[in-house]
Amino acid sequence: MLELKNVSKTYKNGVNALHDVNLRIEQGEFVYIIGPTGSGKSTLIKLLDGEEVPTKGVVDVLGINVGKLRHSKVPKYRRNIGVVFQDFRLLERKTVFENIAFAMEVLNEPSRVIRKRVRQVMNLVGLDDKGNAFPAELSGGQQQRVAIARAIANKPKILIADEPTGNLDPGKSDEIMMLLEKINREEGTTILMVTHDTVLVNKHRKRTLVLEAGYLVADMVEGGYFSHE
Amino acid sequence: MSKFFRRIGRYFREGFWGVVRHFAMAISSASAVTITLTLISIFLMFSFNLDQFTREIEGTVQVSATLNYDCDSEDETRIRSAILNIAGVDKVTYKTSDEEFDYFVQMYDADGKAGLREIYADQHPMHAAYYINVTSDADLKYIAEEVGKIEGIYETSYGGEGAVLLMDALDSVRYGGLILVGALSALAIFLISNTIKLTIYARNKEIAIMRAVGASNADIRFPFVIEGILIGILGSLIPVGLTIFGYIYLYQLLGGVLLTQMWPLIPAHPFVLYLAAILVIAGVSVGLVGSFFSVTKYLRWKR
Image (cartoon, rainbow over all chains, first blue to last red; front, side, top):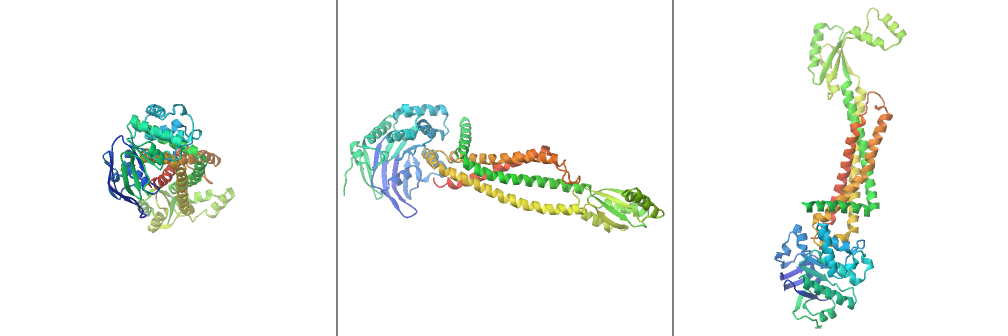
């Protein structure tokens, strides 16, 4: 359902971000993408959500050639993909409920449908009683749950989590991991999680892709991460 | 269909809240619109009334053509038909020299009248004359010249000469005003687009989220365009009020004329309503153009 064939990306300023990456991920998989800063992780995400176009090769998601997508078609394509950021990106002036509902409102869903789905995802992420709270009143872990709830509100096929535990302590990171696993299981969402956290990767073992200086250097189906200096 | 209305409803809701959220900024650009529209309003009042005066004067002014002393009734008939052949001539009336003399004498007081009648008891120096009424869009100067070329005409003149010159002068004032209004409109558009640009920056995060969840470009842009239009309408409120009440007040104060009966003002109703409609439309267009500029420029940087 998600396939990269000989994908290279060179930015206009000459930076080579990705070299000849080949990759295939099936529906319902949970995959880690790890690698140091500047290894091409962000570029990979941008190629997948249609923000960047590959210099060479084909990015195929759900049978759509993302690199060839016309500008006007990108927004509709992007509804297939939910994104969670390291810094949560919640709207401070809106409550938890409104933050999650916002993602559906901008797609002009009827408010009846929105209310139902928001309550559903709030239950899923374990924030049933926080609907009227503002983001500033929540802990970091809870804020990230809101962001995850918002990302899955529109039922995307793929959830990309960009360092979702980067700002959290280990205990909270575990909780977020368990939540993502639950979403993967219950909603059948394919999850790509970009992370630096080797402890987490070793604890919750899953298929792991390793990027280094733009090359896909390892694809370990059994998971785990070891240094290879 | 209901999705369409939900979408339109959201554009207006978001646009409205955008104005409320950035109220100080909205007011500052709305005041630029206010100044521009006030000047446009004054300009339009001036302009329309000037048109009206010009038409009024050209419609009432007569060209007088005096005849040579030796004209007989045959000449008179010939001259009459020649005058009627000139383009723009509406009607010709003939006055005998005696009638002309009586008219002249009427301008003096009782003593003067008696004196004049005594002096010119046997013979008076007045010419017989044709008074020529012209159609409203006629060129007075041209008609006067053409009449002067007819054989047997002693002299031509038209009373409104000074007035027509004044109209020409006011016309150039009007062109100057037009340029000023154009420049001010450009300024208002710039200020609105600046406000919308700042709103876009202030709502960067929201826009990023909207993009991330796949809101279409129209869904992202239209609330900002609506916001610009609302600012334009906000800015037109005061000029519309000033126009309606100011013009009605002025009209009553001046008794419906400017300086003399020769220049009647356009009646307030429904003139002010037309002006108000023009102002609102101008405000909306300025807001639309201004916001559209910045939205197109600042939201197009990404796929």
